[in-house]
Image (cartoon, rainbow, N blue to C red; front, side):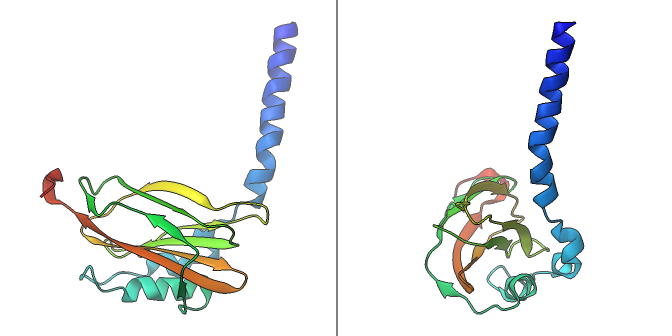
Length: 157
């Protein structure tokens, strides 16, 4: 009988601890439905789709360089799992874009006031393209970008 109480209380505490996180999460697929349909052009070096998506997410595509440390490989052996990480001291919103796949926008994060944006993700790139991170910091937009070459068939040459 004691074991059942313990498990019941443990599961209840776990559910309560997760409740605030789900209550604060925004569903950007519903809030910004048009941004997910913005398509990239066929040329990998054409960032017009990315710039259009940046404007749809942040209201402007006027960005400055700096503040964001972006890490991505120069050459991705496997386009299905390209490691991308970025960090900065503070931000209110961060978005990740890419020019290699049809959809320009990859993800959006809202950063709590006490949060430190330091993310590592793996994204899929169909072909060689540019990875772009844009962050809103004190009302200004900052940008970092990196070209990533995706090799065919996983051959590093």
